[in-house]
Length: 147
Image: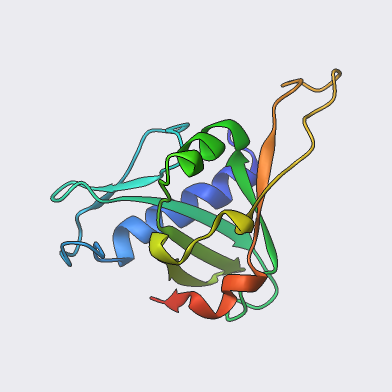
């Protein structure tokens, strides 16, 4: 059984795949979900191979980019950043049945928007796991609304 957070994430991934054209090849209906726990990416274009990250957040106002957003695992993100690899970000903002989809190109991302979180305590189910937070203030005006 999925948690509410997992259901929210699935909603965003499904809607990006259904509603958005691939930004690289411009084809519609070619974005597909990757398997759960695929590192740093959630959708792939089955025509050109484009990879994108999808983050979904429940908000009060779907027209306003949040200041902060929970990311995924810090280790894989940090390694990709060291290699100069950033994935484009789809941001799905959800309130009740209303939603908006925003896009941030990889070219507009900087390492400063990725902030590591404190590792989970020894008593946590995944003790020692470390995530990160997207700090979006510096790139809020760089997002493009797609839907």
